[in-house]
Length: 313
Image (cartoon, rainbow, N blue to C red; front, top):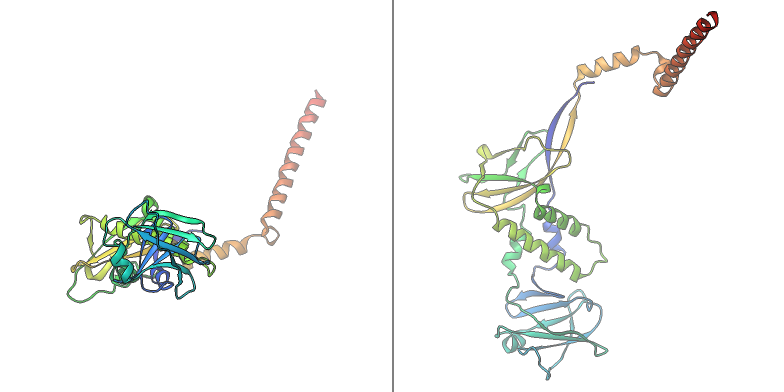
């Protein structure tokens, strides 16, 4: 039966909004085995790997080999995790220097972090985090299997441009998709440190990809329409970058699949052929057995004739 196939691209939900909505609207920075979360200019929370569920003590110094340390008891965040912190007093005392170090010890007195350098300067602002929170919201699109074009929900007076990347051709884009899937599959048992670690990876990777976008090879979306990539393979994923004439940038993730369209006339022809077959042979297994029996019979007859000729001689 002949069929015609049309390549279709549909939009997958980009789950960054949900990913970051799990956490309060804060910023985060990584320091090896700990994360610094910025609540405001005078308040920072420090999450230490492995110590979220137990009390501990921490101390700061501007000297790496400090001996006279003033340890402070950990506190609980709003979700009950044990954390270190930097308040306005500690910030003024220890974080005006380029070099700040932290010590952490558990309730048994065992040192868990021994003079590790810590910084709060690279903690991202709320505005930066909100930018990620609004991914796919800045420039939205409409795509469906029925339409051959992707429609941009644009604003009057603006010009829009786009470019496609095949995700499978780039290690970074594959990593982006993996991170989104991994974070989207977080369950309730995963701890906040693991979440922060993945959120931070996603944050850094996304910003890196945006920074790497060149000004070349952008296609203008005439009439606010995007032409779907041709020759897409089944299950192939695409990164669709969008930008407008004001310099705003956004991204969407799409996947390709094939939709099989059967022509009615072809269906009728097929039905006629099927009903013309003997009912006995509708089952292909029975048909092959019958054909095998006929072949064996033919071979037997030929062999019998050959043997008769030999006997006559």
